[in-house]
Image 1: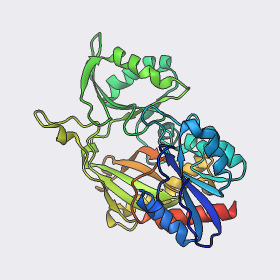
Image 2: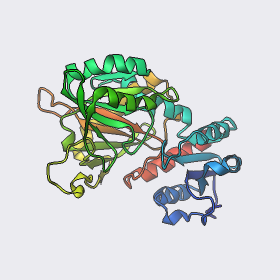
Image 3: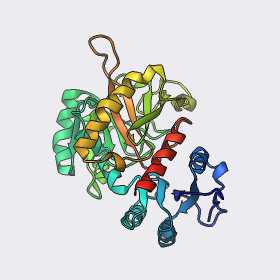
Amino acid sequence: MGTRYSTPTTGRIALLWRGDPEANPPVPERTRLRLIFAELAALGIAAEPVVWADEIAEEVCERLLAFDGVLVWVDPLSDGKDRSRLDPALREVAAHGVWVSAHPDVILKMGVKEVLHRTRGLGWGADTALYRTATTFRAKFPGRLAAAGPRVLKQNRGNGGQGVWKVELIESGLPRWARVLHAQRGCVPEELVLEDFMSRCEAYFNGGGPIVDQAFQPRLPEGMIRCYLASNEVVGFGHQLIKALILPPPGVGPEAALPGPRIMHGPEAPSFQALRDKMEREWVPAMQHLLEIDTAQLPALWDADFLYGPKTADGADSYVLCEINVSAVAPFPDSAAPKVARVAAKSIMSG
């Protein structure tokens, strides 16, 4: 199920993503991960695509046991599917000595929205609250919204803007009215009673996950900076003018709600050296210490999404972390592929 490289190898790595198990095997050179396949081959690693589907979980798990490592690209939520069957399979594979990136337990530490609250004191944080129960959410959120202005609510696990809402109070009397905007593409603002909106959000507590509450960042229209890392090293950047959570101008067509292209940059891009320095020297080591993640456990490829925060006293930019992506990082700059391959090769050799 897949194409193997015939080069002499020093290890085997599976590149795993969700797909149709009945379709023809993926051809590495024609996939979005072709650069990583090529870089692994250049290092003498036999890299093979493996398709995940919940209905063949046992078969895939058995197959992965024959590899030295697995690089995983599977979103937390996609087309009504989640990782409830995948994550136990990856834990089982890892328990048998196969290196897994990113390991599900590492994702639960750094690849969920709760990390925004846990790491809020590291220098990349903003005004952030956490609600673990619907009762606490109902008791605390209205007062915080009234006192602090627009907020952004985020369910603990999700992707593509699912479960991320901008909320602003438009009527403080009883009943309280709010304007809400979902971050998923194509969504439009709604005005409704705040308590009704909060009832809608209670589904996010299913499974024990909290809701994270961050201050809305006014510089959002200036774009989002995605900082890509291979283990603890910055390997590139992406800058994008996003439209999620930004109210469209009146009378414009639907194309105005589409995000701009993500412009990719290598790690040496001058505009982002201050952020790179902060990440490599301060924030990533501090996160590792706080979350108890060894460098060897860091994902081979992950990214941290930043918004511009308030200007400092000397006019420099500050940065506010809005998400860490670990489960399925794509696209990524070409500059990332060689470093990801080297991290993977080193990991299976040292394991």
